[in-house]
Image 1 (cartoon, rainbow, N blue to C red):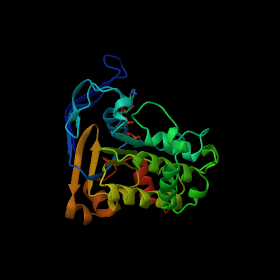
Image 2: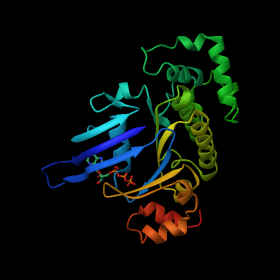
Image 3: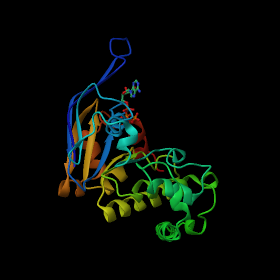
Image 4: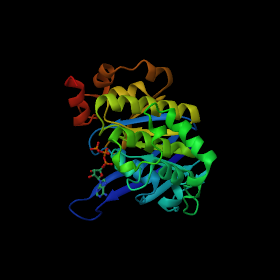
Length: 266
Ligand SMILES: Nc1ncnc2c1ncn2[C@@H]1O[C@H](COP(=O)(O)OP(=O)(O)OP(=O)(O)O)[C@@H](O)[C@H]1O
């Protein structure tokens, strides 16, 4: 469970560029919930993930993950139980290491550095099984360097690494946005499978309204640092893109990219 209470964040305070983004922001996410997050440009979607992951500090407020107040915890310690997959596939994997070495690092996450598992035969079999479940043939490429993989293959590997040690929380920051539509679809299905299998509490930021509606069991829309829509359960299942546009659209709380994607046939 994640409890965010009284969160405040202002950038460039006291200057002409001041952005008072979060003012007493609160959000509660139950264990196992898969929340899709959409919203206008600059609404604070990525900043929210940055604050939760510890990439940037809040000015005030509490962030509690599974009962643990992570407010003062540095990012590298949070990463032991908060996993993140970014838009850029290059950010989740190490190009100069092999697939097996990358997965070994994921197993060792939060522990002292070591690649010892790379030589463990049982571990190798486990990696092969997980890679085979992706259906991309990566199980036969354990020894190749990740730098030669395609963006989609790297993102699939990043997802596997992010869920290798079942995290308390998975943060997905537009993780399919840089992929072609077909690969993006494969990665989304893979995401759903992994999240459901491991019952991982997940926050997914997306500009793709269809994905926001099709995946997850709750949809949150942010606008100027506030939650303007919060729909879960049956109400979310009955929601359509048109309805969402009609209710909250006119572009105001939707990003330019979302509105554009909705009206252009991609
Ligand atoms: N490190 C930073 N320094 C200064 N301002 C920042 C920083 N990070 C975010 N901001 C500002 O905070 C606001 C929210 O940015 P954020 O990237 O969280 O929005 P977003 O909802 O993810 O937007 P988009 O959909 O356009 O990616 C913006 O006005 C942005 O300029």
